Length: 98
Picture (spheres, rainbow, N blue to C red):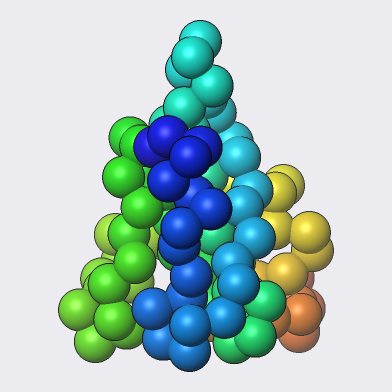
């Protein structure tokens, strides 16, 4: 995903600004893995192989996203993923609830 494109994106749910967390980039600086987080509703949108997954909740597959989020746990700033949103952790068990 090209960095120029990111400036044009917003949360598809509420049109609020989104924040980028980069996991990996190619030598040109394009984002290969990472995620967007909505500043308003806290929804998380993964970027996989350079493609942002910004579908409405009803079209997303939680079981496809869980392995990525487990891999990216260190980048979630102590939060957990619940109903496609980042929320403060309730405890160490049940980190990823769909």
